Length: 436
Image (cartoon, rainbow, N blue to C red; front, side, top):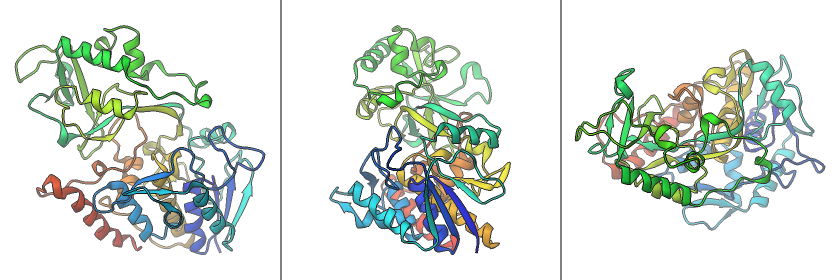
């Protein structure tokens, strides 16, 4: 019988342990927290503790990407979805749970499984020449972080993760926006440009500086900003012209719609290889989500913008997965080691659990010496896997929630009204090929 060690008792680690144990693998699950040690964000020592929200977001498998991921995981035998469903509380179309009941149910399931041993205590070194899944999460301990650095040979992040908003390309108004690189460098059309007049620019700066921001938690405050990725509101507070001489500089660009020079320019850069998502360059922010939507939709060309992700800055720890991991979540330098969960660059509870599910199934196949294919890129699972192991287009890899922009577009025209359902139908049809 094969053996597997899993580091981390969050949603990814618990899901991985369940999947491997059910396949007959003897699993040792390590969790750093116990009754004497917590993390700055956790309040209990319970496995699969939810610390930020009691909702897994939309549960609509016909119209939302996260709802689709829920359904794919249910069909994959997910313990996280089983316990979430059993502890569901009223929340309209969302999957919200009793947090304590959910955590207790996951822990009880794992404790009672004959193939799972749970060990409390910090892991400071990653075992060599053993099958391991590292699912240590965004609050990886310093000692384990050092161990990861040693085996990856690659810088990885442990600071405020600066995330700029991402917009669906199809929602951009090209009657106002246009494709062009500054001074026509590169391919000459590498960016989407949204122009601003002087009045529009100063109204924008005023809105940013006066809007409500998200406050840092006490345990985040000691981690400094990097000058290269300052929040837009911090730059704006340094002077009204700062943004215009920074990420919004208008030089080297001419508006083909009217031939005029803009006072300021908002640029968007392609964020995935499919070309369906565009990142607002330099727009990392601590503005609250509601404020972001209103302010950014005031930008010419973005009046009808639909956001795949809002901007944000928070403490996070994740590896540069596209460089370090293969398409089975194995560390390229040490294939016996896999990574799963938020440490890989997925964002969100369910996405983390989904990553743990896939890592476990791939590991089981290796241990048992059986063939397994990756989930199709047309599925939510496959789209997430593709994003973190090579689908991201930006030079700077950033965490991502599941969204329809990660799935391949259709080769035929589908109305906007029917598109989401079509994505979901195709995904669930294609999931069966993964052998679920």
